[in-house]
Every structure is written in C-alpha cells, then in structure tokens.
Amino acid sequence: MNYLQARKFLDSLVNYERQAKPRDEFKLDNIRRLLELADNPHQRLSNVILIAGTKGKGSVAYLLDAGLRACGLSSGLYISPHLISVRERIQLNGNWIDKATFARLVAKFQPLVKRTKVSYFELLTALAFELFARRQPDYAVIEVGLGGRLDATNLSEPVLSVITKIGFDHINVLGKTLTKIAREKAGVMRSNRPVVIAPQYDEARRELLTQAQRVGAQPVLVDERSRMWDEDSSAAGLRFSCFTELGAGRVELKLLGSHQIANSLTALTTLGIIARSDPRLNFNQVVAGWSKLVIPGRCQVVAENPPLIIDSCHNPESGVALAEVIRECFRDKVILIYGSLRNKLVKRTVTPIARYVDTALVVAPDSPRALAPSVLKGLFTRLKVPAEIAPDFKTALARAQELAIGRLPIVIAGSFYLAGTALAMVKGLKSDPDAI
Image (cartoon, rainbow, N blue to C red; front, side, top):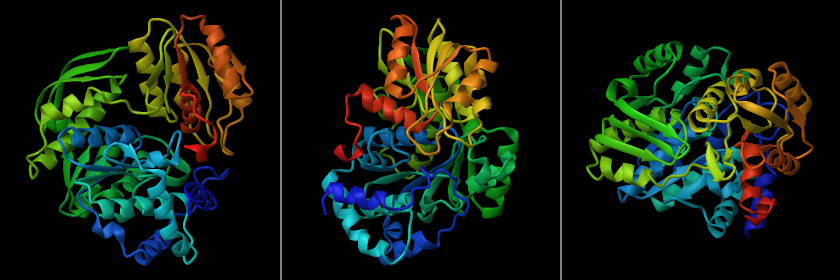
C-alpha cells in the first residue's frame, strides 16, 4: 500500500468532521475492539499527557510539545483537525508522520477495520497510538477530539490530564450549559493522577472540582499556582514575566494575543508537575524553545504589508480572543474574510470582532457543513459591518487585498477548513491533499 492508497482507504471511512449532520451517538465499543485486534497499542504508551477543553487545547498541546523538545526530550504529538495535510495530526519530535510510515500503519489496520467498523477519527487515533507505542517517545501529547468522556483518545491512560478553558461549542452534543460541557470534559480525569485546570468560568470550575473529587483526581489550578506581570502584547508578539510551577522568568513569544498567556501558564504548570519526577525539564530551556514557536492557524501571521493573519476562530471564546488580538496589535480596522460551519454560535462569535472590522467578505468553507454566506452577510449587516459575498476563497482574498490598499490588515477566520485553505494557498501548496 502506498500513501495515496492509504489516503483513499482512510477517506472511505465515515468522517463526522465533514458530515452535514452532527454525530448524534458516541460509543467507544468499536475503537476499543479495533485496538484489541491490534494488540492494544494504547496500553503500551509511555507518559501520556491528555488535553481536553474548548479554547486553547491545540495551543497548549503545541506549547507542551515544543517545551519538551527544547529540554532534549523526544515527543509524540496527536492533534486535530488538520489544516493542510492529514499527516499534521500525528507528529514525532516536531515532524509530521512521513508518507511511507503512514501507509504502513494504514496497511496494518486495513484488515482489522474490515472486522470492526470505525470512523475516520477513530482510525487516525489508533494509528497515533500504534506509532507512539512502537517509537516510545519520552512523552506523548494527545489532544482530545471532541468532549472527553467518550472521545477515542480517552482510551489512553494519561499520567497527567489537562483541561483548558471551557466554553460553548458543540452544544448539540456536549450540552447547553457549562456544567454539562465541563462534566463531559472531566472524563479525561484519572484517579490519583494530577489534572491541570486552566482558569475557568465559575460554573465550569465548580463542576470540574466536583468531578475531580468524585473521581479521586488531584486538581492543580493554574490560577493558584502561577502569577503573571509586565505584559506587552503587540504585532511583534507577546512578552510577559511569570512565576510558575516550573520556574520564574521572562517569556517572549512570536504568538499574538494576550489569551496565549493563560495557555502558556497552563503549559508551564503542566511541565512543572511533570518536573517533580523528571529533572530534565527546565524553565529557561522551555521558554527558549517557545521563542521560535509558530502554531498553525492560531492568529498566525503569514504575510506583512499589509499584515495577513490566519486564525481558526470558531466559537465565542475564540471570538473574544481574536477581537483582543486586533485591538492590541493594529491601530486600524481590518478586512475580515469569514466563513463558518453550521451549528456554531456564530452571532456570539463575531459580535466582539465586529467593532474592529472595516469590511467583511463572507465565503463558504470547503465543507458540506458550511454555513450559507448569505446568512453571514445578514449577520454582519445587522452588526452594522459592510459585508460582501465571495464565491470562493481565492476571490475573497483578491478582493480583500484590493480593499486593504496595502494598509489595512487582513484577517481570515471562522473555521479550521477556511484556515487550511488559506494556509495552503499562501504557501503555494496544491489543493489536492494526496499531494501532501
């Protein structure tokens, strides 16, 4: 089996990320059976760090991975969704899984999948478990796909769990209150194991602490274990001083936005807990490694004159964060290219951004779940933002550059799918995912 054949087989599986209707049933029976047929690779993983949450879990995963590698440790990273290539989802030591290894893993699982039906995401999770079990990196950083309790990644046995800020997303699946959503996220907690809890809304915090007590987990509250001061956020990046579980000092990041402070403190708290039993971890080495870090699709600056920023803002918390980035980093309003999926809290997401937008160009992301641009145009119009519908992203970008007249920043946001399309185009990559 070659890489293209492996991709074809993977794409033949049901992909709930791209289905027009959201998944209405979650069970772990099929993925558990598949892993049993594959000799339980999830039980052979070393030092799993499992990350759940609504806002910031991808950033925290990248920060942890970069911090571990900066200290000379080997790492596995499993994230979702991907922006450009499915190979992004499974990484070893900062590198995407290579095509040949990807094909070999799919070839191993193909006959097993014929014996038990699994989804696109479940197979990818099994591939990550298998690779990390074979290569045995010092740590495996695994990001939960959706929720926590019934997510395929939760079949791993973490030495430590992390829960980033909880907000409203996937409410049709996880629940319409922060209490219900937090209860699902709390499924990643383990008895007698630490769970690092990022700063939370009061309702979510109470539920997480209740669940930690019920499970017998050891809660570690980031806002009680760390302090931050002397913040400086601009278009050049983010700088702040802090005292954390791992150590104290100055942090300088290329990342945009004050929201990355909470993510950084969460990662430093997590690494500090790990450092209690692993003296190889060092604050100065971690922050030195972070100084070079770029996180794809998270307020990522991909061009200048005018600035071009790609973000995967798709829920209310992300909307607030993006609004803060625009306010902190740019003196002018921005040209916004926006596309969203259906079943998202779009009005609550774009409302904080609207005041900073000169013109909104609305487009449909490359997904059967795309929200009609006409709906978005109406929403921006009601928010008193001039809006235009673009037939596709390429047209939207050309129009944005025309409106920006080399002066106004251009921000692309609303969906991981739109961010991926934008990133591929900016980097000059082929649109056919099989090529990458």
